[in-house]
Amino acid sequence: MAIADTDTRTSTGVLSTVVYGARPAAEGPGLPELFAWVDEIAALTQPDRIHWVDGSRGENELLLREQVDEGKLIKLNPEWRPGSYLARSHPSDVARTEARTFIASEKEIDAGPTNNWADPAEIRATMTRIFTGSMRGRTMYVVPFSMGPVGGPLSHIGVQITDSAYAVTSIGIMTRVGTDVVELIAAGSPWVRTVHSVGAPLEPGQQDVEWPCNDEKYIVHFPETLEVWSYGSGYGGNAILAKKCFALRIASVIGRDEGWLAEHMLLIRVISPEGKAYHVAAAFPSACGKTNLAMLRPTIPGWRVETLGDDIAWLRPGEDGRLWAINPEAGFFGVAPGTGESTNVTAVETLWGNTIFTNVALRPDGDVWWEGLTDEAPAELIDWEGNPWTPDADRPAAHPNSRFTVSAAQCPQIAADWDAPEGVPLDAILFGGRRATNVPLVLEATDWTHGVFLGSTISSERTAAAEGTVGELRRDPFAMLPFCGYNMADYFGHWVRVGQKLRFDRAPRIFQVNWFRKGTDGRFLWPGFGDNARVIDWIIRRIEGKVPAVESPIGRLPRTDDLNLEGIEVPAADLEELFAIDRESWLAEADLTEEFYDTFGDRVPSSLRAELSSLRYRLKQG
Ligand code: GTP
Ligand code: SPV
Ligand code: MN
Image 1 (cartoon, rainbow, N blue to C red):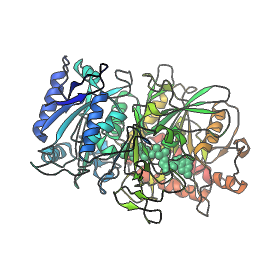
Image 2 (cartoon, rainbow, N blue to C red):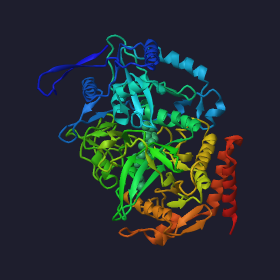
Image 3 (tube, rainbow, N blue to C red):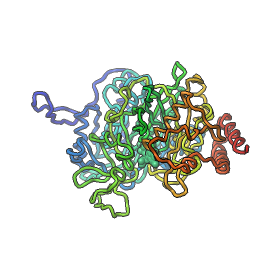
């Protein structure tokens, strides 16, 4: 059934009625399959209505207005934050739920020890059971989307079925939604099927809640049939299935089979004082600084950064022997806390309007606030759970994983060609994590294989982006632990093989960085944020062959004199500590790496085992 809306924005000023939600009137051999699938899901989930999303502005406005009317979104004061909304989730539904995320590959070994495996036939039966009638009393939206520019050579398309209007409006920001995708499907392009239900059917007359969800949650991926089924959560990566579920878990499997890489990486263009452009991708775990680096404002004169992407990059070896990258997304789903004028002014400017905020605090004047937006908290707020809050409260006003959803095009330093279908050629890849100890500020790999070894050994302290104990150190190779759709040891091997397809003198150089090393007194040793440009500056001088590096057992380090520290005060002792290598701790890390590798049995590439042996050898040498 279609929804009629009265559109007052016609040029003549005359009221006209626009109808949204109708099945697209496309034609082509691919359509019967799409229509049959939608019918099949509707028969299973039994929604009251089906709404085909066309991605138009008018439709988006209608969906937002409906959510406000239903009490699911709060419209922010347009004087401060035009076109913007606040959503408050259920307190139990605030982050990705890794324990409830499954890879249902035919063979358990293909999911590997780092994923929760589910038997596809068994879990399909479970999905059929829990999705039966799960959309009763609700609208089922059909959202055709493209990851990457529609029809681009590196792009992939999919359809999400969902009973959450919040998800629809979020997907509208994060991906390219529209009828042109249906036309590609009609013409026979392959597409990924994703199904999402918050798992909260409404009985006739039953009052809906602000944030419907279910205590029982399932995020299930079928890599062989390119399907995602997500149940019970309305939040972030659990509900915007194009993001982690498709663009990382499913896409990593497609990439394995087709010879490319789907990565949890930001993507930037760095322009040197000489005007030369370099492209850098960086993989850091969730809430470890990707959005911040993606929007870097260098504190050293002459340097500029253009944003290309902040969370996901798809990398493909080109005919020219270089590694080409696109950002498949169209928006940012960024961490709010810690985002402020002094840390990420670009993000603050990006969020001027047209933004959906989730789980941040509400100001009395109808604007939003979160920890770190300003140095001082407003005297009065409504916290993320809807309760009155004052600065003397002993809890944060915004949830630590509260986020903003905003179009990439709104970023003031977005690259003019950020959505170029062919992408950009990479000059450097950075791997990082949140490490209070051991890992130096920056380290250069000796070659591709050593770089892959570094990526495979990344550990990071847990953050609020997923359920679990914040601060606990865990392995997060390539920042992909929660996002790799297949056996991670095979994934390491795939990285090695992709390197072999690149021309050795054109492959991106690989570095490890750590903005989070702390002194014994618990404070960060490195100022971070805009000053991270100083590290990028060294990296680019290395690429240009302009500075020598110091060999160390773990990789190549800068001579401290080569770091541009003009204008900042980093005490000499801090600088020394930032690069200190404690052989005993590194030998202990090597033991842990071996233990980690052993969990994969004999599937870890022998070249990485060899890297581990050489590392130990170098560490034991005087
Ligand atoms: P996801 O969206 O979860 O993938 O996170 P992300 O990797 O994009 O992390 P983001 O840039 O949002 O940063 C997360 C937190 O780390 C924020 O609170 C930032 O303020 C903080 N952060 C980012 N960069 C730095 C840095 O250079 N130094 C320090 N100390 N903190 C940083
Ligand atoms: C992350 O956790 O890495 C995110 C947020 O980017 S989510 O989309 O919820 O996965
Ligand atoms: Mn992320």
